[in-house]
Image (cartoon, rainbow, N blue to C red):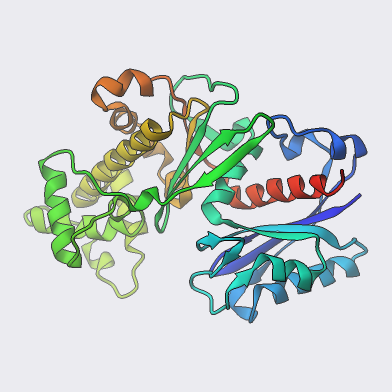
Length: 356
């Protein structure tokens, strides 16, 4: 049977996976709605992680991986698909944080002797990864049953804020990326207006995107905002936060979720409220009766805090549209390799299409 390659490419690590479908019936059966890898006879032949900066070009890392696989007796992959940290246009990508030239899928396919090589924006890959999730890979926040073949939405705060949505085309789901994280931050109350004005002044900008308040990059600014607003409050982590190269977002979120620091608690209370509100905004725009999923690096780390009632209340607090949002399932993804799962899903689709 044909083998295929999947990958998750970041500024730090390049993670690659070689897979194969063993069952001919699975190989040719139509993917109605998409089938998870656990539902078919799919085998992982090899999986390795490389340091991205150790290679002058992604193709060199993939070549090394394939050579190692062949040396172990595995056949060469016929197609490849990778999720990558950067914007993808016309199957080409310029990755952030690695000194690589423009990566072009058609050129990769030729260099690697593959039928096709596909780049997915990393958050689009996360969207396809949803189609691979099992029950234990997520935490459901409300008791709502997803509607079959309905739209699905995904949002994730990490270094930035990613948003995407999925639609069913009659046979399987397609994922559509967006730049929703760069939409305007819409302040809802006096404290949020103060945050908006603080960020405009601090960053010397007019446009404040929602990503500025719902992402890892937001937490240091929110900490400084509350530190200035409430100078009388003691912050037990202030000395730690002020250290050079301190992981401020991790420090603030940890102390805030634990309730161990008054300033950090205010930060996380606001952050969770803003996160819930933006999940609700995305749901209003896409009506994802198939579910809205929270992914990204932050959600799983603060899952206990997101499970508290104020998160869902912020999601629902849309006036007359509350009754609409009450019918949309909300879940948190706790599986860490969502993007790799998505690339695997798409690579499987491609290798099947070439088999017919």
